[in-house]
Image 1 (tube, rainbow, N blue to C red):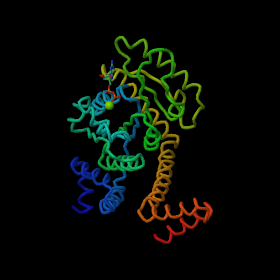
Image 2: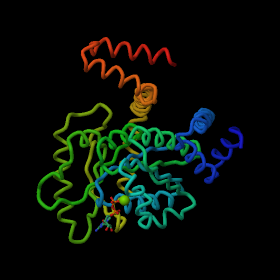
Image 3: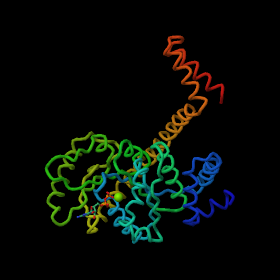
Image 4: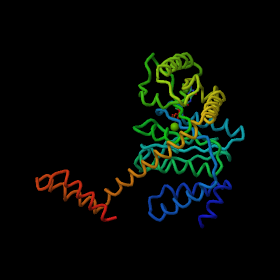
Length: 326
Ligand SMILES: Nc1nc2c(ncn2[C@@H]2O[C@H](COP(=O)(O)OP(=O)(O)O)[C@@H](O)[C@H]2O)c(=O)[nH]1
Ligand SMILES: [Mg+2]
C-alpha cells in the first residue's frame, strides 16, 4: 500500500491500518524505518490533538484495573481511547498490558478503544521512540485520549512524562504512615496522585495515604504550570469505579487552565525539543555501535593502554575517523 492510501486509512479510523502502522514503526529494518518516517511526516497534516495522559505506578497498584474502568467511562462518554505502554522490563513479562489483558477484557473489546501492548526486547531509547511515534499515530487516527502506561522502572517515568500533557501517579494505600518509597523526582513530575483501592477495608488506609501525599505535595516547590491546588492527591477505587469522573474532571480542568495560560503548547514545544535532542544523542551513539566503529574503538583502546597514544588524542582521532566514514 502506498503512503497516501495508508495514511488515509489511518486518519479515517481504520484500526487494522493503525495496528499495521505501529508494527511498522516498531521495526528496526532500515527500509521499514524509512517508510515509517515518511508515514509520520505524511500524517502530520492531519493536525489532530489528543489529551495525552501518562500513568505510572508500581506493579499491583491497580493500573490495569484503573485503565479498564477509566477507559470504559471515557468511551461511555463517546470518547475514543488509545492505551499504550512503556515497559522496559517487558522482555521477560511479555508486555505489561498483554500480561494482564484479562483485567482489560471489556475495554479491549470496545470498538472505541485501542490497546497496544509494549514491544519486547527493546532498550528504553527504542521503546521511547516507538511509543512517542505511536502516540502521534493514535492522534492522527482521531483518538481523543491517549493513555500511556508505565511501571515505575528506572527512567521510564521520565520517558512517559516527556510525552504526556498530564502525568498521573497511581498509588495503593500504605500500611503505616510512611510515604511509599516514591522517589522525590517522581513526586516532582506528578500532576495528579491517585490513591487507588479506596474501598472496603482499605478505605481508612487510603484516606491516610492520600492526606500524607497531599501534605508532601504542598511542600514541593510551586511550579509555574500549575493553577491553584495542583498538583493534587485524590482517592479512587478502580474496582468500584468510584472517583473516576472526578479524576477526569481534574485532568481536563488542569489541561484547560494550561491551554488558556500558554503552558499546554509550551510543554509540547519543550517536549519536541527534548525528543529532537534525544534522537541526535541516540543517533551518535548508534554510530559507535557498528562493527567498524567497535573495531576502531578496540584498536585505539589497546594503543591507549600500551601508552602509545594518549586517551585525549585517541578519542579525537577516532571521532574524526568516524566522521570521515559517514
Ligand atoms: N480493593 C481494590 N482492589 C483493586 C483495585 N484496583 C485493583 N485492585 C486489585 O489489585 C490487584 C492488582 O491490580 P492490577 O490492575 O493488575 O495492577 P497493576 O499491576 O498496577 O496493573 C488485583 O488483584 C486487582 O483486583 C481497587 O480499586 N480496589
Ligand atoms: Mg497491569
